[in-house]
Length: 148
Length: 141
Image (cartoon, rainbow over the protein chains, first blue to last red):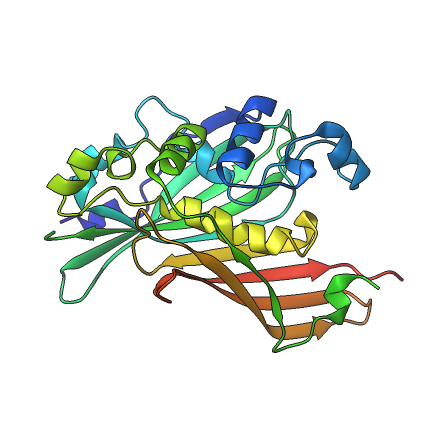
């Protein structure tokens, strides 16, 4: 089971360039059909300075690494026991095409439920753009099941 | 009059019915999101993990639920959005997204804040996600 000594652990920041290709493929894969997520002119017509990212796009940033699940090794979590329990976003500013977003993540909490058969681990992440303005914050809670 | 002003506590936002979940949708989402966890794309891995088949990414279903909001409210009005992943979304699930206004507040600048209780159910009314969203639209002075 994951040791509570890991609470507070900080990970190296990850930087992510928001490209048109990434925005369009994500919007398309999530069934979005609003043109503000696909077309620069449409976004401008709706009052945005350019195309924007859909609400859950931030998840792409945490996967933007060579081995996005490598952190599980140190925590001794097998991938086939890991499930996503909850996700929370607070939004401060839109994420625009052309932004460079830097994400910093830390382990916020580790706790048990159901007599220890479920171990929860939550990660708090902050996202700032290239102008050093905070655009969002997320809390991601994962659960490790002790048996299948 | 803007839509958000006509909503009151107890009202439901238009529900969003989704296409049946297929393995192809999951692999498309896996590539677009970068989440290549085999539990979503490799049926052999999923079976070894004790499941009947691959399951959908919780984040994909959360993205569908977000659409129910952005179909109704301007994107910039979304202040916060959260989801609890209650049960696994399976291949073949036919999901519907729902939202109910639970609170409405108008401040002295005519800014409207809505708290919306949300859920994603499958065709058998099984709860896949329970969620909450806060919407805020600045008033005209």
